[in-house]
Length: 217
Image (cartoon, one colour):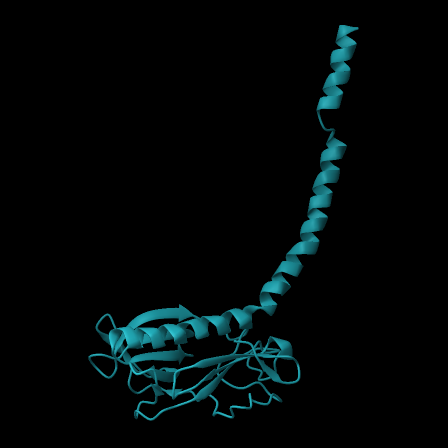
């Protein structure tokens, strides 16, 4: 009787091979369902993440300019696919402070307004225009120049100016292209825009609702 009881207890304490296989199959099915969902979720929010990175760096540029009492330049560098923070003192070219990588252009574009999209209005500012950098900046004693960039210079008085010290305001757009190099957004509700007010250095953050831009921040 004692041996029979021990045999029954052992069968009840352990899991059979069939039970283990069933559990593994269930886990595999749940993984197959959840992984594509997570991937699509991350893909849908890449433009949002990139836009917020740019907003944060613009705010940091403004605050650094005020704290250091000198001009701080922000560049969106398409050649390096990064956003740069540059201290312009003591030379006009300046020294690199920070470099934040951008999403791959095939996933997120930042160099143009999406096709068939009307810019935020008001304010009806010009869109950010990219051009070859002839000023450059220092990285470890080496001047980096010739990149395709858009730049804005934050001054210690809170204003934002061009290289010619003229107040500037601009719209920057961030959106996922339907295919690499396309100016058509994969989904209009994923389009983001940042408006930079040159006179005060203030920022306005926009989300597209499928029809128009709606101010978010």
